[in-house]
Length: 201
Image (tube, rainbow, N blue to C red; front, side, top):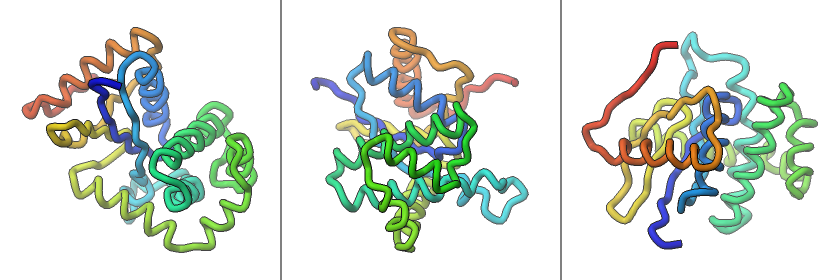
């Protein structure tokens, strides 16, 4: 697709804010020439050793490690598509149905729903290097300035933009509305002087 924009989207499945933004980005990709690459930023790792560490932050590990395994087993494009599908399944489970994605049965149901073998869960959890892969991806974006999810990085022919946290949204735009919001977010991300825009809660 001509003039396609490449976006690397960093997420943690347990984060409701990243979840809403990911749904919006999927809407954007329907109305704008946007290719999304999914990547990992672990809230467990971000909050390790801090008072802000919560029990829920540990619930993404199984999903993350399966996603890391998918990257080894498949080519980049196919692995990215499978990670997209698995994130969507896990997100619907935890945020829409309030299920515990730290439980095997929930992860196994997600794998089944996207046509993947249940053995991936055991394989990912028995191989400690899958966690290393997750943390490597996490540490890379943190080293570039990422600190939370969602984090977006534009990757164009002129190079990559600095990581941007957000946008944090409380409603998921669809159709042209999603595209209009993206146009403005993309423009701001490309401005080197742009730092922050925030509303009070």
